[in-house]
Length: 90
Ligand code: SF4
Image (cartoon, rainbow, N blue to C red; front, side):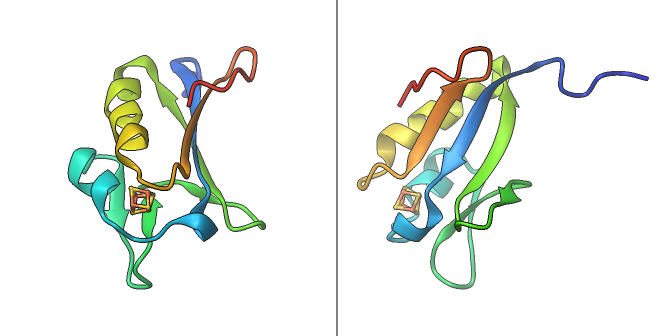
């Protein structure tokens, strides 16, 4: 069976409770981010966690666009980690 996670190198994280709904992430990285009916953004296909955060594992190809989304966030609620060692990248 193919290992769907073998290409995943980073974890994309969204501190959704802290999101102010400015839409910058969805404008910068529309393949990965969308605005929700409650005015906050969602990671497309992301997993909702009990604490309100969302997360999704992404590949090298998907990294740059999400880094730009994170850099565009005025309240710094988008984070990226390396999966191999949990290193915080932003
Ligand atoms: S850029 Fe940040 S504050 Fe703005 S919608 Fe995206 S996650 Fe929320």
